[in-house]
Image (tube, rainbow, N blue to C red; front, side):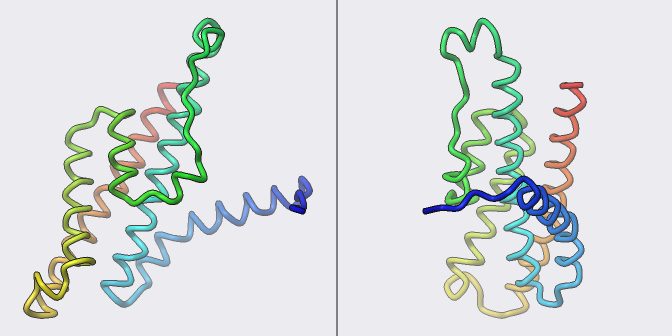
Length: 161
């Protein structure tokens, strides 16, 4: 039987999660390996896309309270299921809620390049220098995507105030 956590334990978990998320970009910077940085960055991007989707879900449902919710309108997304999605699946889902063509193009390019490195490394590359160069380009692309995600989230928060 699953034990429920006390309120204090849940608050502690939220504080620890927030601290971990805040420190994560610093940890990426400290990582020595380009490929280690890439792995950490990709996970951070996935996490931020999930957070944005969840935010849009809650904001949409809040906006639609009243008459629309009485008609049965509700955005339903299983958050635990999102955690099993690939970055490509998350990006495709986000496209249904967010019309930002330039952002989606950047994210699609990042994912395509990532798949080339991760899944076709031995076919696509003849040297570690080429592989490292593409990985470093991906890190730059990823940093831009993270800034874009932060700006998009900030824009929605401002709009809801």
